[in-house]
Image 1: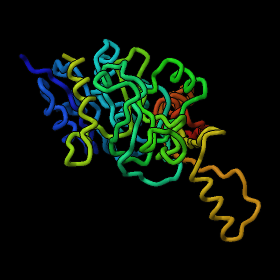
Image 2 (image 1 turned 45 degrees about the vertical axis):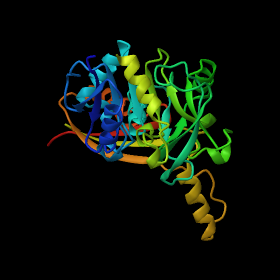
Image 3 (image 1 turned 60 degrees about the vertical axis):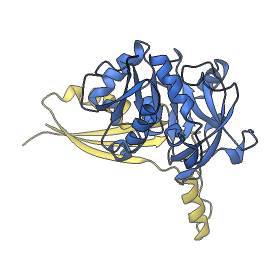
Length: 232
Length: 86
């Protein structure tokens, strides 16, 4: 079986690129491919991941400058053609700045950098990225961010909810969402959303840091399995 | 001519500004009473060298909406001062 090439975009300041590379490499039959932000060729990859980190030092707003890197033109075109695109943490911020996902990610409501294991509810398994999860499954991924507070106009939030496009929601260990379970003040406890066409997902928590039981959780693996299966 | 540009950016009204709230509380803690509605924003200054002074405003407007501010969560205003070269 031929390998499925999955691109991992690196901007100056991206720092979860190797974690994502290893996560993708762990899935058969994927082949991770580095994509430097100055490139204008996606090298025929069949899926794209924007990894976490601090692209351009988070100057101005997280993701605001990366969004104008040359590679992003190609990523936007790839997404418009229906190619699967996954944005993790800073990758999610870049996708909102690029207009590929709605809303914006604001400073955490308690102003602190939040770094902890976080329970999430998979609100829908009806996406290419979550097809390997059970409906409303509770999973645990680490979060590590200072700007994860998802905000949008009320009409946009309503529409995301009505259309089932809230894919991940912050919950506590019992699976209940609400104040203490929410690490950043995100509206409706939103941790991840998908675009209207269903091929671009962004989430603040790190599935790439939840690939092995020995680091506390292997719950992130099904996202990459879903991505590779969809891309193939 | 040179255009001197000042851009002010703030979170939209209604958007939670935890930095503003924290500063307000800190001011209250050191004895300043009655401080309300504190919002923290950005102030950006730059110059544009141009021969076409008519397009400067449209240019600055575009810079703000495309990059300097995120219109989903922020509002902005700018002030342009034109200086003719001597």
